[in-house]
Structures are given as structure tokens and as C-alpha cells.
Length: 290
Ligand code: ADP
Ligand code: MG
Image (tube, rainbow, N blue to C red):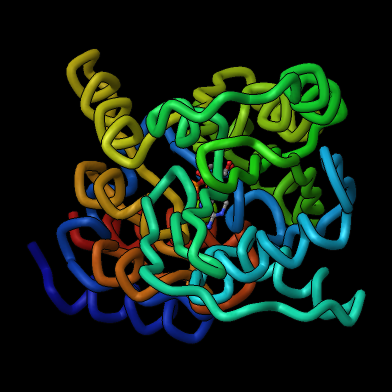
């Protein structure tokens, strides 16, 4: 190895908003065959907004209940729900016993009642009855929405549909990967139909939806067992296990601290195409060392 060339490459990268934390990942990147991509916050802006509310009772009451449970959560979906309640100038009561269940949602006590907000499987785990809301969930998912169910006292009381914009640079990043012979693989905790809408727009054929954080790491492991060298790009706490399992873990800089700490490469610039720039630099520097 010739450390000088690597240092030089790392310097080029830093100028472009790319931080290489390990020299090893830097060299491995040139041999990567598959790039796993988180959806929310990586391929999309990660700033979802509330688009639909289906309440069994009063719509505003549902939104303020959901916002109460979500106010302590850092998740983009939580922030969107709290923001929507604020925009409607709703009163958001305090919550107690807040707990976040990564990849599922949150639980809290609001005005003495246990409240759950999250994916429908979170409610199933707490044996909550969907109360006839299944068709509404289905309709919203078909429209490509991320769907969050709200329950109080063990009863579903409504669903919230959230939408997120695809990042303007995501299509170019995926196109570059494919041109370079890399296989893009989407991995997301979101529902299959919301995932498919984004995958279709970006030209990603391999999609794993409804995946829990450990599931993302397992997908990386499965690809590796099949002989692939894997890069993983993510931003969330739910991406940390896969970022560590991948041969090259890449965190988007705006992401959570845990994602950043688990990664080999950090993209500080707000641009997914920087992933391919990092690869190009890594390849050219590596060649210089030979
Ligand atoms: P992604 O892999 O796309 O970044 P996550 O693993 O963070 O998604 O979340 C997966 C799913 O879990 C979300 O689509 C949502 O249904 C549910 N979820 C996660 N966190 C929350 C939360 N704070 N409030 C409500 N639902 C949540
Ligand atoms: Mg994410």
C-alpha cells in the first residue's frame, strides 16, 4: 500500500464534501457490486408531510392525539405529524411514558390513556383491533403514502397518510450506479407500495420493503454470502446495523448521529450523487497505489 496516494484521495474527497473515515473502506469501494439504498431520507427528501387523515371520530382530535404521542420523537414522520397539528393551531397535550420502537413507531400515555402511533404491525403486536380501518390503509398505501395508524386504549381511532418527495439528485445517482454496472437495491421499513412508487421512478428493480433494522443487515449478509461486495447508504438509526454489516457503510451527513457513527464514509454535501463521486475518487486513488 502507498498511504500517500490514499491521503491525497481523501483530501480530494474532503474538498467535495465526502469524509472517508477508514482507508480500508476507501479501497474496498472500488470492488463493490451492490449498493443498498434506504428510501426515507436517502432517496427521498426525508421531509414527509401529512397528506390524508382518516379518523373514526373528529379529524383534529386524532391529529392532536397523534402529535401528543409523537412530540418527543425525532423521526421525520413524527415531526411531520407535530407540524401538521401546529399548522392547524391544535392544542397538543403533554404525553408521559414516551417510548420509541425503532422501525415501528411510538407509544405514550396521553391524558391517562395508552396511545400507539405507528405501522399497522406495531398495533398487531399490541393486539389492537384495526376497527374496520384496513380498507383506508389499503387505499392510502395504493396511493403511495406512508401510513401510520393511531390507537387509544387498545382501539384504532384513525390513520394518517404521509407523502415525501423523491430527491432531485436520486435519479442521477441511481443512473450512474447502473452505468457503472452496480446493482441498486432499495431497503426500507416503509410499506411495499410506497416503496414501489419511488423505486419505479428511479429505475430500481430490487426492492425490499417492510424491513426492520436487523432485516436490513440480514439483506446485506445474504448478498455477501452470494459473493457480492456491498455498500449501504442510509441516514437513520434504523440503518445503523446494515451500515456496520456492509463492506462499505455510507451515511448521509444530515442523518442521525448513530448512522454517522456506524459508517465508513460520510457524505456531508446534501447530494446522493456524491456516493458515486466517492467511488470514483476511491478507484482513481487506489489505482495510483498500484
Ligand atoms: P425507512 O426504512 O424508510 O427509513 P423506518 O424504518 O424509519 O423507515 O420506519 C418504518 C415504518 O415504521 C414507517 O414507515 C412507519 O410506518 C413506522 N414508523 C417508524 N417510526 C415511526 C414514528 N415515529 N411514528 C409513526 N410511525 C413510525
Ligand atoms: Mg431513513
